[in-house]
Length: 149
Image (cartoon, rainbow, N blue to C red):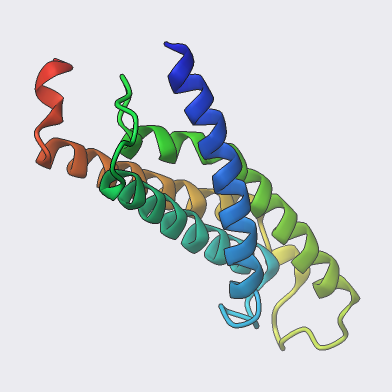
């Protein structure tokens, strides 16, 4: 792997963290506000991840003078954004869970024990696979895969 890919991958990871933190901060006020903490965190993180991945890859594709990499941005950015997505998910899950425990207005029939972190990570993994699939399809449609195989 060349040095340019590592540097741009690190830049992508930082950009993903910043974009997802800003997006989830906005989404936290109106996306499933009455849901259990893990479900709510996975929804806002998954949506922010998908929008940031699609937005950045489209921005890179339309920018003049963007560097040509051995790994296309359609594949590199979704992979580089994974640690940021995991961090953002765990942060919001912890924040929502703390607020849920401290709140006396928990919806009727729902207990804190019904909230499982593994289901949230599964939802996030599904969004990651969809984003990777979209990136792979875009890469194949553009016809750049001929030189790789």
